[in-house]
Every structure is written in C-alpha cells, then in structure tokens.
Image 1 (cartoon, rainbow, N blue to C red):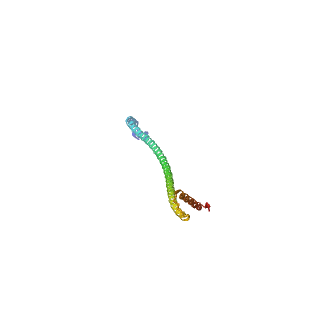
Image 2: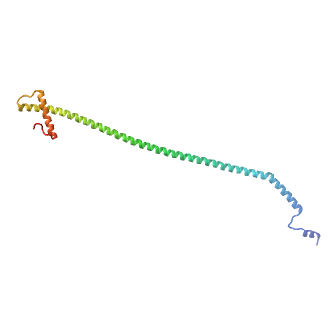
Image 3: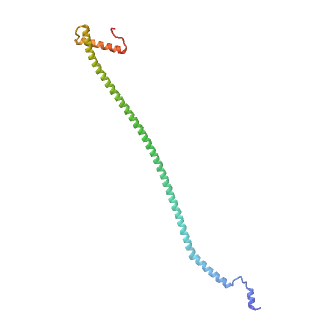
Length: 183
C-alpha cells in the first residue's frame, strides 16, 4: 500500500479538516456579530413599534368603548327622563281634562239653574199678571152680577173691591179643597 492510502485511511471521512472548522467558526462568528449588531436591533425595533401600535389600538378601543358606554348610559338616562316627562304631561293633561269637564258641568248646572230661576220668575210674573187680569175681569163680572141680583148699583169702589176679594177667596178655597166661607 501506498502512503497516501494510509493517511487517507487514518482520517475520518465524516469529520472535516481542522482548517475547515476554524474558517467555518470565523464565518459563523462574523455572521453572528452582524446579525447581533444590525439585524436584531432593527427587528426588535420593528417588533416594539408594532407592539406599541397594538397597545395604542387597544387603549384607543378601550377609550372608545368607555365613551360608548357613557353615551349609552346618558341615552338611557335621557330616555328614562323623557318617559317620566311624558308620563307627567299625560297625568297633567288628564287632570286638566277632568278639571275642564268638572268646570263645564258646573257651568252647565249653574246655567240650568239660572234658566230654571228665570223661567220660574217669568211663570210667577205671568201668574201675577193673570191673577190681576182675572181679578179685574172677575171683579167686573161679579159686580155686574151682584148689581143685577141685588138690584142696586155697586159702583162704589170699596164695596166692589170687598165683594171681588171675598168671591176670589171663595174660589181659591174651593180649588184647594177647603170649605167655602158662609156656605
């Protein structure tokens, strides 16, 4: 066998040569330092900016949510106040309606009472006028009749007034069911 074959058989084909390991380690160290010095800070900066934007978005969303909750609470309060105001106005309107109805009824009753009183006064006045006219007509008839029966003239006013009054009182007594005086 040749010496080259002996050296080749002494080396492990799976292990690289020492100079390859050193140069690979130097290259790996240089790549690691470049990544460490330049790439990793830029990457971290990008990740930090993104985290800040996400955090800002979350804070903004929480703020908007809080404002929306506050607006909802205010809306519900205004809605409740509006409903209470509507109920109060409805109650006031019902009270006013009842008061108006009561006033109109009272006014109608007073108007009816006034009309009844006026009619009663008119009836009383017409009754008095009828009584005066009746007294006058009955008086003249009674005087004429009494003059014919007695045969003398009863033109004396006092005497004829007494006869007429007595005759009318007798008529009133008969109409009320009392016995006639002198009968």
